[in-house]
Length: 87
Image (cartoon, rainbow, N blue to C red; front, side, top):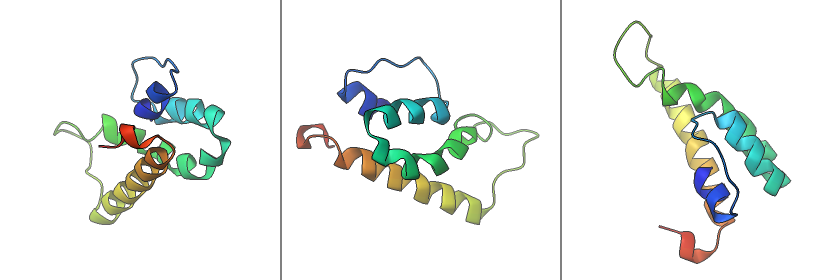
């Protein structure tokens, strides 16, 4: 999402909040709304599971679902950028 915003010269604050970043992306391309809505729930993966501790880790099914969502968002955003922006 940050790469998509950067490619469109849109500033964003230093954050891992996918709700905030998603809303900014959706303002540029409303067709992203159905794809970015499920990604909002992935914000927790940016911090909660990063370090060992009291938090229960997600199940394998939850992890696979989160990865599938992340991949679909990545592909959708990348497909909307010029070829020069592709890795």
